[in-house]
Image 1: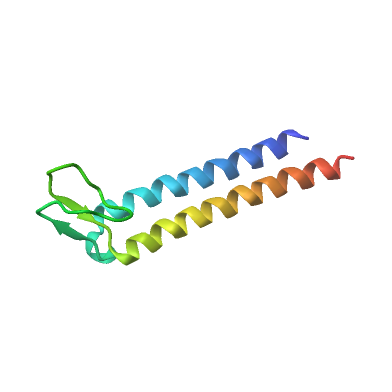
Image 2: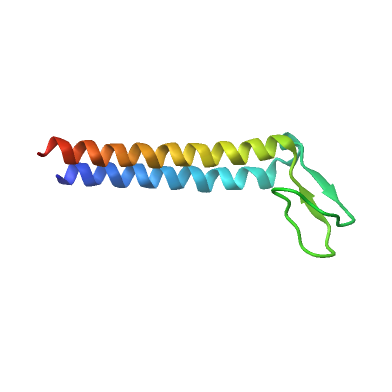
Length: 94
């Protein structure tokens, strides 16, 4: 495996994590877009709620949950692609 292979692999891994980190900031600033709503009185919450006991909090809307699952799915697809890339490079050297 050459230096070019490791450089491309490093860029792919960095891109995957850069996108994941960038996506995590979007939800904090676009509550209206995601359909999030604010609870002044705490109650039982389902997936994605930013919750602290006895504190007001944001509750994720449906689009926010879809955004989360999309990010996880894209991350897993990219990890699989990196694995295929490594496998093909290893097979081409034999």
